[in-house]
Length: 196
Figure 1 (cartoon, rainbow, N blue to C red):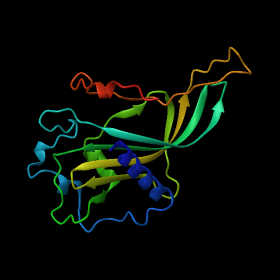
Figure 2 (cartoon, one colour):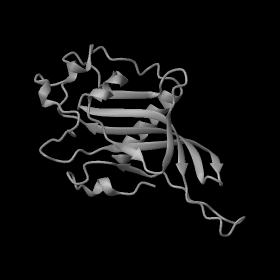
Figure 3 (spheres, rainbow, N blue to C red):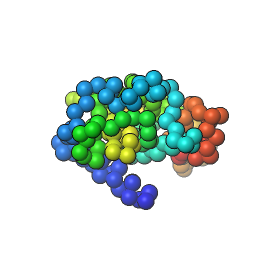
C-alpha cells in the first residue's frame, strides 16, 4: 500500500517536472471556495483540523530531494531543492455535483480559506517558493475528499558539522520536519516521529 502511494507521488512529480499538460481541470466547475463549503458554512472552521468520529487528522507527506548544493562550512548550512507533498482528508468539504473525474485541480489561493497542516522544516534558515514562469504549487481535491498539496521549495538548512577529524570527516545533515500545534489535543505518536 505504501509502495503504491509512493509510486503514485513519483509519477505525479514526474508529470509536474516534465510538463503538467495532462493535469487539466476537470469538467466540474467551481466558482469559489464557498462552493466547497457545507450548506451551513458556519460548520466549517479553517482553524480546526477535520476530524471524523473524533479521531485525529492523519497527514501523510512525501519529500523528493531534487538536488543538494551550496554547502557552506563557515555558516554550517546547505541548500536543498525539494518537492514537498502533503495529503489529508477533509470530510467537511462538499464535492461538486458534476464532478466526473477522480480528482479536481483547485485554485491555490483557496488554501487561505481551508484548514491545512502547519508543518515546517525545523532546521530551515530560509524557505523559498519556486515561482519560475509560474508558481510551482498545486492543490487537488479527490472524490474521497482527500486534499493533496504539492509545492516545489528551495531550503537553506542548518547542519551541525563536526570538523574534529578534518580532512577525513563525514558530515550527516538532516532535514527535520515538525508540526507546531495539536500535540496536546491529538496525542498521536505518529505525529511525534523524527523525520530524517
